[in-house]
Every structure is written in structure tokens, then in C-alpha cells.
Length: 359
Image (cartoon, rainbow, N blue to C red; front, side):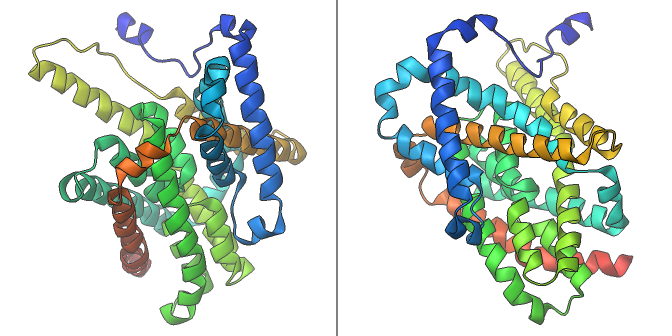
């Protein structure tokens, strides 16, 4: 038991020697500058009207630089870039908890909770079945697209990456599918509203339980009414809250699979409980925010800082993404994401109606 606890991964692996290495400082400077550009671009009117967040702009900017000038300076900046892609990403996921209170979660009631559980599990299970059996995609790409579609878009994809140790280009592919179909949902849902026969509250639950990104949920809800937007955001935040148990469950599943594979190969698998501690700390952060012991002005600053951290991590991810690897992935990831989008939209509508009738 002691050895199992000893082998448990820590939320942050700190190597103090790297901080005196110029490759760390130069790499951090590079990603911070690019993240600053992404944040500034996200404030442009054209970007705001299109609901392109600094995270989306950051990964695109990172990919552009990563496939042009970065190769010339990679050996001078790699430590800092990889630090941003791993450690700062986990820190950003933890601070994401300061956006959600347990009271907000309780506000949507048991029907909202059940709807999110059914949509999350149904979407992810469908992703795994289609990805592996129909489209013959590798497991990492399938998991990342499934996580992004079923939970909270790019943030879920990025949070899942360190748990399954996914390659950068696979993460980028998954994020791209979230951007494409989440944006499509953002514009399509308000148009569909008048034909759905739903109340504003029911529409809000539908939006929050099926659209990918928080920003896209806000846009789709606001296009109908403020009441619909409020309900949609709360329902979406409940879905975001499920990120932590999802990551813990995924980690246990990965560990069990590795153990089984090792047994089949007559090898030995190093046991012990594998917990993504940043996911647990995400819940802790949400709990602290729920207690309202921190002034709102302070939490607003934390949320803004968190957005910067996640943008930096996205930039670093983009720098490590090679266009050739994305091209090699082909159209199959996009087709998988399309199928999940149709399930979220059509299946999600039916599931929302069915669960509403139960309550």
C-alpha cells in the first residue's frame, strides 16, 4: 500500500534546475508573447462577433509559428514550451473551478443533472464505438474528440491530454473539431428554437447540455433571451463540473487496461492508484468559490488569469503541432465529430424532451 501511494503521480512535477536554464526562460517568453497577441486579437470586434476565444486564436497562432519559424529556435526554447504545455495547463484546469459554484449546479435541479449525465455518457460511449469500430481511429484521438464533444470543448480536450499522454497533433485535431461543430451549433440552435416548441428554460437546458464550449453556449442562449442564457450557462457549468470525475474514471480505466495488457504479455505492471490530482483540485477550487470566502473582485482576477494560463498552454500546444501530422489524420476525425454533433443535436433534443417529461 505504501508503495502504491508513493508511486501516485503528483499534481505538479517541479524541477527547480530548469528555472535557471535559458531554454526555460526563452520558451516561456515566447509562449507568453504569443498568448498576449492571442488575447489582444480576441478583443477585436470581428473575433468577438464570431465568438472566437483567445484559446482558439492561441492554438491557431501557435500552429502557424510552430510550422514556420519555431523549428529554428526549438532547441533554445523547448523546455519552456513543454513546461507551458504540461504544468501551466494543469494549473489552468484547476483555476477553472473558480467559475462554478455548487449552488449554480443545484439550480438546474435533478432533471438538469440527469440530462447532463445521459448526454455526457451517451456521447462519449458513442464516440468510442464509432471511433474504433467504424472509423478505425486510434484510441487517443477517439478519446480526445469524445471528451471535447461530451463535456466542455477545448478545455476538456486539454485536460484529457495529460491523463492519456496524447500526442500534440492529436490534441490539435480534437480541438479543431470542437471549434467547427461548436460554432455551427452556436448559429444553428437559435434558428431552430422557434420550431422546437420549447420554453426558454427548456431551450436553455438543451443548449447547456449539448453545445461544446461555454462561450458558444452563452452566444446560443443570449440569441433567444437572457433567461435562456442564464439557464444554459448553469446547465453547462454542471456539465463542466463532471470533468473531474470523468478524468478520474478515465485514469482508472487506462491503468486497468495497462495492467491487463501487461498480464497478457507476461510482464509486470506497476500497480497503485493513478489519480489526476489537478482534476481533484479543480473540485476543491469550485468548493472554495462556492463558499464565497473570496471577494468577487479577486475571483474575477483569478478567472482572467486562468484564461491567460489556458491561452499560453494552447499556444504551446500549437507550437508542438505539425501540419503534416494533422493532414495524415485525414477526414475521419471530422466525420466522427460530425456524427457526435448530430447525436448531440437530434438525439439530445429527444433526450431532453424525454427527461423533462419524467419530472
